Image 1: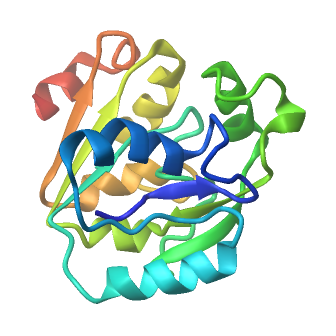
Image 2: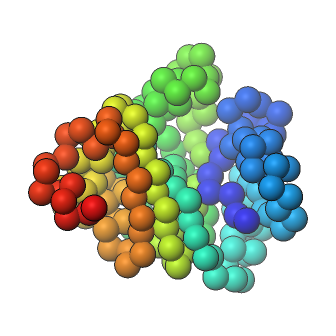
Amino acid sequence: MFHLDEYVGLGPDHPASFRKYLLERLITKTGIQKYHLLDGRRPETAVAEVGRELSSAPVDVAFVGIGENGHLAFNDPPADFETEEPYLVLALDQVCRKQQVGEGWFSSLDEVPSQAISMSVRQILKAKQIICVVPDARKAAAVKACLEGEVSPSAPASILREHSNTILFLDVDSSALLNPATVARYK
């Protein structure tokens, strides 16, 4: 199992650490024995080490979501659709950082790290299958842009439309702004 993204500067004891989340809610509960987690305290080392491991084997399935700004992992707009690097250290934009406060991971914008380690867009697209889950009305505009607009770095998750085996799960709220023809096409 490979970690998708992590905040730069956070240790595994921080409540917002995705490393902590994965360990507590997935790895220990399922007994996953082989996993590669990103250490946000050592971003360059994490990118190199976990990236090397990720490049050595095919990925069967990637589990992703779409952010309020259309981000895919922490690939905020405008995302890099070209790099073949497995992981990147990226700046987080204001919309993404505000989303983290809105989701309750941080109590203020000042607490949200300004950078994150993220699996690159091209690396995500190398997965044999992608499962994308997008709940919440706050993401409805991003879902609309990603499904009805152009495939563009300005709407990073729009690139999922170019993957031949992506399954997208939306709830009533996140799909509320979609044109009925779009909903019918993707059912």
